[in-house]
Image (cartoon, rainbow, N blue to C red; front, side):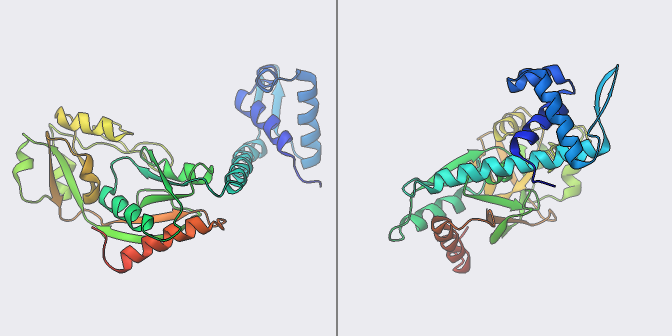
Length: 289
């Protein structure tokens, strides 16, 4: 069987997502008959039915659902390869480092300062993102390297270097009774009747059950805590964005969090290698906060 073409995969994904040949053809900017023929040809080449077709409409078969998942990954990889290739053709461009806004601020500052002091070090552009977005930026080629946190972030498929292990703190409204304590436990903060703990998205984007608000951004969290609507437990180094209305209290039995620097294993970039070496040197010399 010949290799699948990206054009075929794009056609298939459009039909699979729209579940309507007419809408898919309009989305692709082509007529419907050529699209229908292309899908039939793809099914013959694969030897499976990708869609169930009847008077009620179009539905994915089990084989079609598998191809939709795999096709998305393949198309993303092709797009990322093209982007990385274009970026590699401009060696003077800055290295792009992705990190959550407000996270690991002091570590990031020291890393940038140390790297900038190296002879011939390429410039670094910091790409601030929201919770859990670094993995997609790395896989998509928009970032070359990222600061991420184990066990919270999706590290699957990346090369990593551990930089800093630390405890966590509870961020509380300054006027709440818990804010006056010298330390807390997870039991203290898990079921607070008037202050439900904020719910972060899991790696698959879904949220755990619970009464607390669903949050995706640091700005959401900061305002909700200041309003007395929620609390959160975060790595101690992430409290750089803390407002005057917040108090940080150590949570003594919270799981330890490790900050890592991560990059795609396929990277052959000398600039990435240089930044990773700077980070590893800081960690080895215990110069990180």
